[in-house]
Amino acid sequence: MADTCCNSTSKTADCCSTDGNIMLLACSGGSNVGQLANQACVELTQDGFGKMYCLAGIGGELSGFVASAKDVPRMVVLDGCEVGCAKAIFKKAGVPLRGYVVLTDLGIAKNKNFNLDRSTLETVKNAARQAAKSPA
Image (cartoon, rainbow, N blue to C red):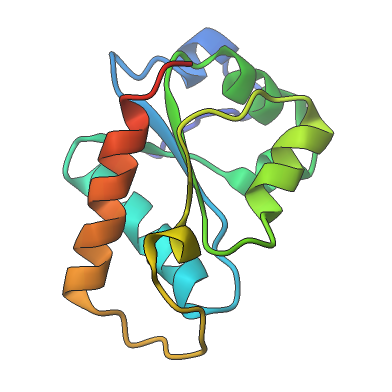
């Protein structure tokens, strides 16, 4: 059965019932750091660390997505670079930004090399885990 999180028939409480997990959001921009952010969220979800959610739904101001992001107890938001697209989306939607990580602040250079390095990906995942520990 497909996940129906944040669709028009689901309740916000059902949508964000992460059972202690963390909402994971990534700016999946058109560079290596955007793709690293996305892949880190995918793998953290697969690892059972949290659950990946749709940043575009928040940016599109879809009410269920915005309400879910406002109501979830814990989140990690990964922006690939200092442009801060995810941060801007949260500001526009009035969603408090929590667990925020900018990948270029981790010393990862932004480029168009989409061959993602395993050790760099692990660095991003570890930073996300640390960010999840930060207070709301």
